Image (cartoon, one colour):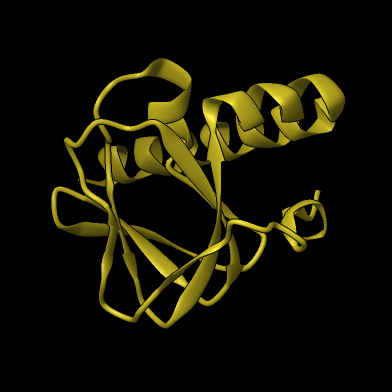
Length: 121
């Protein structure tokens, strides 16, 4: 699922300059983002977990479980992101069920990569 198509006309997209922190590990979370343009990196305890680009999501865990952020997200380049708060998230899940499946697949993929890294360590 290419989320850029769903969010390209987002009227409240936010712009971040390269090297700016978008989300901070340990901070409260009430919004996730869809990357529309540019690239961001996800860091856990200072280590880069992955680089996310157009169509990818970040910050979804804290939105789902209402717990502090598990990772820091930093802009690698100038970027534009579509914010998705809980209300919009629930609307998307209700109106576009494949959106929910997409979010679950992203979570599963990240968990599998973390498990693989843990086994190598």
